[in-house]
Image 1 (cartoon, rainbow, N blue to C red):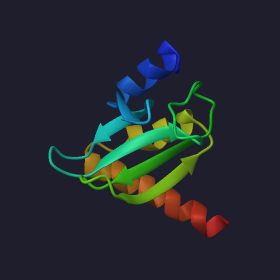
Image 2: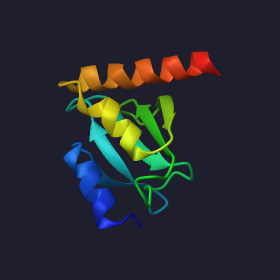
Image 3: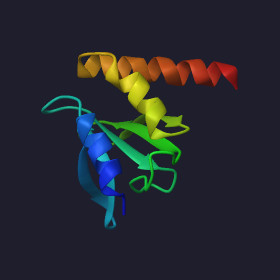
Image 4: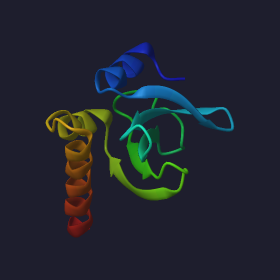
Length: 106
């Protein structure tokens, strides 16, 4: 289970703790009231236990179909990219830009 400081960290970024499946929980962010959403998990599909744990940022359709994901070395890097843009759409575009830039480096 994630520590309270990890939960507080993500709540400050407007994510909520949510149960996803098989008793697992993740950080959830709804992109629009009736639309796509984002889950942040560790590499095992559960909530990260520390802020230094590698994480997966995954985008899904409102029906729960996987769209795309981006990996981050830690939660601090996600916060750096996620916090600057103002709207949900701008935030998502910033993450996509980060993902695309990292794919080109591989």
